[in-house]
Image (tube, rainbow, N blue to C red; front, side, top):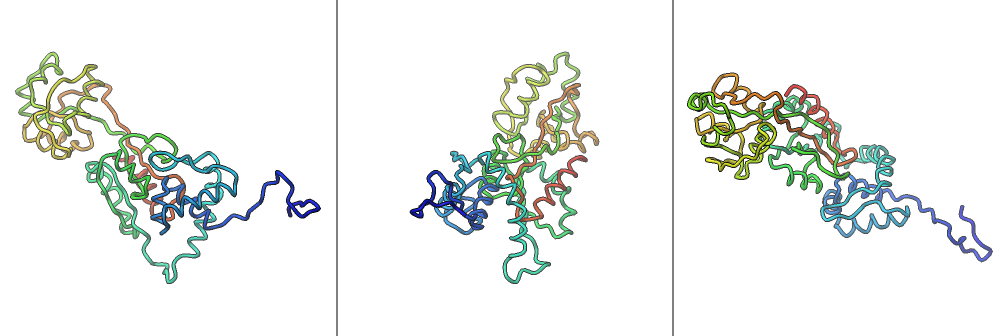
Length: 314
């Protein structure tokens, strides 16, 4: 009970204690998970101004800023992490009990929206998560580049993203998934024509280069890491699909740099040959990224944990 003066007014400086509104806490948790007022509004079926007003109301009630507004979404303030940890399990349990009317126990969960590089998805991820389909998991797979996929993750369009780099900040959480090794390869016919040059990097300057993009991101990285020099060469063929790059090199179009997992079978069969086998090949770590907190869809955690386990054998 609040103390009052003889005139019935509350003591000056006394913080008004307001019982927490479950709707406000639910909105807060949705914004916390999505990292975006707009995405939270879409998931909650509210307007974006309503979500903004509810968060401001909660901030006034608690006397603390919960989110830092940024150009792309919001970042949880330190107190928001503490509040989310306190309410996530009670609210999720309540949501499970008070589900939509007529919700049967055997009703399917919402699909898990998973995104990442097309080649890794087709070569490793989809075979890795295939056993989950028999457990009732529904998947919606989206290929793409890391940066736009992470933007979509922040706005709630994806549940999980496999990223080629760790995102900065606290708006997303990332766990290392696997390391991919890059290899320099060509067809046997190209290798035979090349011979055994004393300086491989210089000799390859006259060989057609097949690449993923005009700016040669993968090949340039290999050159810097292995040869310690900048690659100055225009590609003969570009294709934003590493499987197509591989097919062109197998056909004899030139040389390229590929992730080892993508060409392991071709190297084993001999249709591709390693041009160089350095002691310290370039490695890139892939990360499994999601929004902070626990998803309301239990299958998201199931897919995440299964991927982390399956990736050990990739």
